[in-house]
Image 1 (cartoon, rainbow, N blue to C red):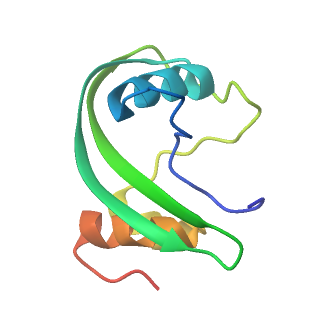
Image 2 (cartoon, rainbow, N blue to C red):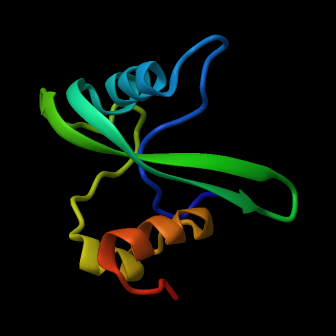
Length: 104
Protein backbone atom coordinates (compact mmCIF):
# COMPACT_ATOMS: atom_id res chain seq x y z
CA UNK A 1 0.00 0.00 0.00
CA UNK A 2 2.51 2.51 -1.25
CA UNK A 3 2.23 6.10 -0.12
CA UNK A 4 0.71 5.30 3.27
CA UNK A 5 2.31 5.20 6.69
CA UNK A 6 2.05 2.14 8.89
CA UNK A 7 3.38 0.89 12.17
CA UNK A 8 6.53 -1.26 11.79
CA UNK A 9 6.17 -5.03 11.84
CA UNK A 10 5.27 -7.90 9.59
CA UNK A 11 4.06 -11.44 9.21
CA UNK A 12 4.55 -14.24 11.70
CA UNK A 13 6.98 -16.90 10.58
CA UNK A 14 6.06 -20.59 10.82
CA UNK A 15 5.92 -21.56 14.49
CA UNK A 16 6.89 -18.04 15.57
CA UNK A 17 5.23 -16.30 18.52
CA UNK A 18 4.08 -12.68 18.21
CA UNK A 19 6.82 -11.59 20.62
CA UNK A 20 9.55 -13.29 18.56
CA UNK A 21 8.11 -11.93 15.30
CA UNK A 22 8.10 -8.43 16.79
CA UNK A 23 11.73 -8.74 17.84
CA UNK A 24 12.76 -10.14 14.45
CA UNK A 25 10.82 -7.59 12.40
CA UNK A 26 12.03 -4.56 14.38
CA UNK A 27 15.60 -5.78 14.09
CA UNK A 28 15.26 -6.38 10.32
CA UNK A 29 13.37 -3.15 9.57
CA UNK A 30 14.81 -0.72 12.11
CA UNK A 31 18.00 -2.29 13.44
CA UNK A 32 16.87 -2.22 17.06
CA UNK A 33 16.74 -4.93 19.71
CA UNK A 34 13.56 -5.13 21.78
CA UNK A 35 14.37 -5.40 25.47
CA UNK A 36 10.86 -5.07 26.95
CA UNK A 37 7.45 -5.01 25.26
CA UNK A 38 3.85 -5.99 25.92
CA UNK A 39 0.76 -6.47 23.73
CA UNK A 40 -1.65 -3.51 23.62
CA UNK A 41 -4.49 -4.58 21.31
CA UNK A 42 -5.43 -6.66 18.27
CA UNK A 43 -7.69 -5.80 15.32
CA UNK A 44 -8.99 -7.53 12.23
CA UNK A 45 -9.57 -5.50 9.08
CA UNK A 46 -11.12 -6.51 5.77
CA UNK A 47 -9.75 -4.88 2.64
CA UNK A 48 -11.54 -5.63 -0.65
CA UNK A 49 -8.85 -8.16 -1.65
CA UNK A 50 -7.72 -9.57 1.73
CA UNK A 51 -8.21 -9.66 5.46
CA UNK A 52 -5.51 -8.81 7.96
CA UNK A 53 -5.15 -9.39 11.68
CA UNK A 54 -2.87 -6.87 13.38
CA UNK A 55 -1.42 -6.65 16.86
CA UNK A 56 -0.12 -3.43 18.36
CA UNK A 57 2.58 -3.80 21.00
CA UNK A 58 4.02 -1.20 23.33
CA UNK A 59 7.81 -1.18 23.21
CA UNK A 60 8.88 -0.23 26.71
CA UNK A 61 12.62 -0.43 26.11
CA UNK A 62 14.91 -1.09 23.16
CA UNK A 63 18.59 -0.92 22.28
CA UNK A 64 19.97 0.79 19.21
CA UNK A 65 19.01 3.73 17.03
CA UNK A 66 16.05 3.18 14.68
CA UNK A 67 17.01 3.39 11.00
CA UNK A 68 15.12 2.60 7.80
CA UNK A 69 17.10 -0.52 6.88
CA UNK A 70 14.71 -1.47 4.06
CA UNK A 71 14.73 1.94 2.38
CA UNK A 72 11.59 3.15 4.17
CA UNK A 73 11.16 6.64 5.61
CA UNK A 74 10.82 6.90 9.38
CA UNK A 75 8.98 9.45 11.50
CA UNK A 76 8.32 9.82 15.22
CA UNK A 77 4.71 10.98 15.47
CA UNK A 78 2.87 11.92 18.63
CA UNK A 79 -0.38 9.95 19.08
CA UNK A 80 -2.48 13.09 18.59
CA UNK A 81 -0.82 13.73 15.22
CA UNK A 82 -1.33 10.24 13.78
CA UNK A 83 -4.64 11.17 12.10
CA UNK A 84 -2.88 13.62 9.80
CA UNK A 85 -0.04 11.21 8.97
CA UNK A 86 -1.86 9.28 6.20
CA UNK A 87 -1.76 6.01 8.10
CA UNK A 88 -3.28 2.82 6.67
CA UNK A 89 -7.00 2.24 7.21
CA UNK A 90 -6.39 -1.01 9.14
CA UNK A 91 -4.31 0.92 11.71
CA UNK A 92 -7.05 3.47 12.50
CA UNK A 93 -8.44 1.53 15.51
CA UNK A 94 -4.96 1.77 17.02
CA UNK A 95 -5.07 5.56 16.63
CA UNK A 96 -8.46 5.66 18.33
CA UNK A 97 -7.17 3.57 21.23
CA UNK A 98 -4.00 5.65 21.60
CA UNK A 99 -5.78 9.01 21.48
CA UNK A 100 -9.26 8.27 22.81
CA UNK A 101 -10.80 9.87 19.71
CA UNK A 102 -12.19 8.33 16.51
CA UNK A 103 -9.87 8.36 13.52
CA UNK A 104 -11.26 9.95 10.32
